[in-house]
Length: 291
Image 1 (tube, rainbow, N blue to C red):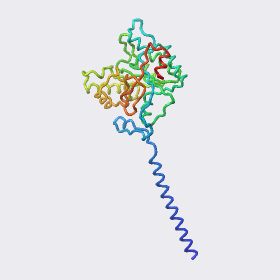
Image 2 (image 1 turned 180 degrees about the vertical axis):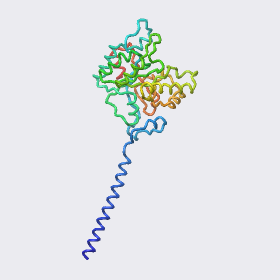
Image 3 (image 1 turned 135 degrees about the vertical axis):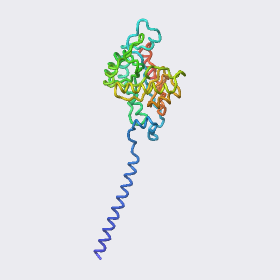
Image 4 (image 1 turned 120 degrees about the vertical axis):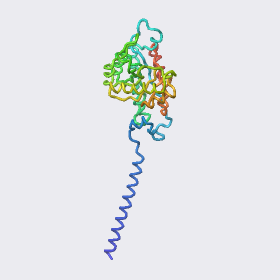
């Protein structure tokens, strides 16, 4: 009778352990299924297969970030017209702006960081700011890059790939060695097309738009070994077809000249910016950023 009782007790223990093991297995699977998604493969992004962040992670799906737009940083030519002067921020004024941003607690990110944030793979600083520089002029590499490095900032430089190293009138474009040096120092290099064509001009066919945009990606890859997916529209001009061709070429982000700080994280092909005017003093700059 004692042996029979012991056997029953042993069976009960084994049965109980089996039940606990099964419960633990299903609990583990449930926890595993709730893990955050892994980092995205950019091939999926380019093919439109990316998934949005977990529901509720960014409930409003928007972010307010000042993206600053510059063209020239340095001294405007003596004979410069009003447009050129407005596009030129002096080197001393640019440093004053960077120094104030640093003192005010702004943390600098780049455009790729913004994309990663939109997909839940990057944490923004408390007060983010982004520097962008259109056209790839030599003066921004000579005057802006050292200031950005001095204050621990970075910048996103949009290159007209077939203009690099050229001089056209009063505009001198940075050479590829200068661009590569800035890239090696932590600056972000993005596309501004091959030849700065106007994307809203109907004379440019869908095929032309695609070939030009695809070619700009190839040019940057050939020189720097990186494949950018970020485009700053020349003149800020684009159309629905232009965006379609840009996506087909491999772009997942498009930067406009629309004024504003609020970014729709579900539409990264129409991102607004804040234009920094050459005539703006530091007080106007502060109001632009914080207004």
